[in-house]
Structure formats: structure tokens, C-alpha cells
Length: 78
Image 1: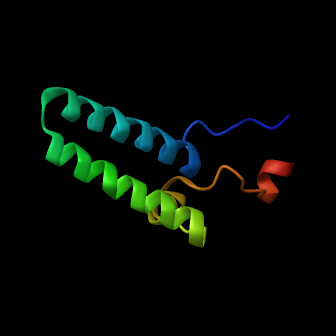
Image 2: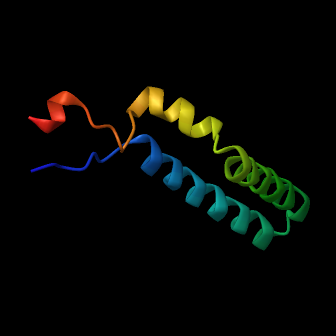
């Protein structure tokens, strides 16, 4: 039976995105609209780049650190 990795690149990247959105929400709630909107624009541009080119720099870096969730390695199949 295959077990899922607790920390893999795609899951960590989604966790980072959700924390980033919560930080943006907190900044906007506290009145730091310029910083919050700047961070939201940055995140939107990164998601648009990921959509168009199917490339996300954070996923590339996190894959090197944690490994991919979709890895079909020999040792996992045994």
C-alpha cells in the first residue's frame, strides 16, 4: 500500500499560498492596503505565469528540497 508523503513540494507550495493569502487578508484588514494589494498583485502575476507557461519557481525549488508528490520511484513501488 502506498502512503502519501506529509511534506512534498506541491503540498508545501499550496500551504505557502494559503498562508500568503491570510497575510494579505490581515494586512488589508489592518489598513495596509498598499502593501496588501502589492502582495496580491505579485501572487496574481505568479499564478498567471504558472497558468501560461506551466512553470512555478517555488515548485521547482521546493521539489529539490522535499521531492515531488507525484514521484513514481522504484523504492516506493516495492
